[in-house]
Image (cartoon, rainbow, N blue to C red; front, side):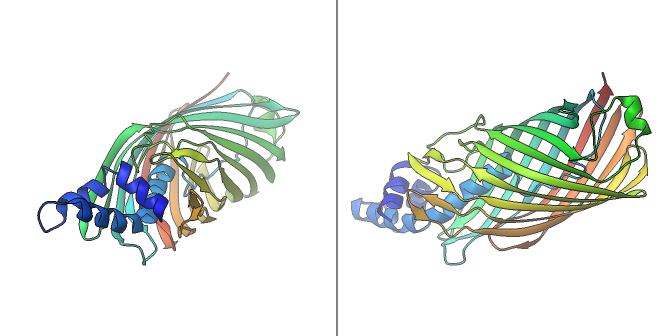
Length: 341
């Protein structure tokens, strides 16, 4: 508690100072400030979770539901994409904390590029995505409404995927002649701490830490239908400059996805999606927070081809259950341009 009190009193212009200004009873003296610092320290674990939600929503989307993430493609297949997404909803916290009515409204644009190639006889794909994020976090701290707005670049994300079974490295002609079969793939995603970050701020867009996600994906075609199961885990590095110089650690966060995809015609498909994730408890300067996450979401994705090389993708998702963490609704639209070298 002493560590939390010291940090809040020293470095919280967003929340602690606002509370001091709005306390009734006239000018705030030394004893009054000490009292406010003591009370604000109680809310510190909840404010840490605000930082977690803002950072995760912007840079490490554990709630992601990406259908066809392990789909087959010929060697030399290139894809450029640009997408916009909007997320809004509530953040569920421990009811014992003096922070209520927490909500977020987050917008993000992502520009990305991916390319398929052969790796030891298997189809592989490398991709990179660069986000830009802007949004607002709101909450009531001791009956005082607080609001924080941020905008800036998010953390760069890189992904390498290899289909280990059922998808050899093939030319476009060989690929077109191959009958679809069950595939098993593996991937690793890396989130680079390159986004906007200021240790004096509680809520940031960047996370100021390295993040890794190893993952496995199974895809099984049945006529025009495709069933997908994906499982992975987010592994978080430490943030050694969290909110005034603290050390923030986070336990692994398990993530599971399921997709049922129906292909209407080549390059036109619709998918029903579901995800569940759990874990991710955080620790700040050795103090364990009550922020163990456990949530599930469902959604729908539709891809529509426009001409030979272009396609549009629409996605919608909403929370179903949430113990701790974000219970968010998502709407996204994306444009893709693909070509073969």
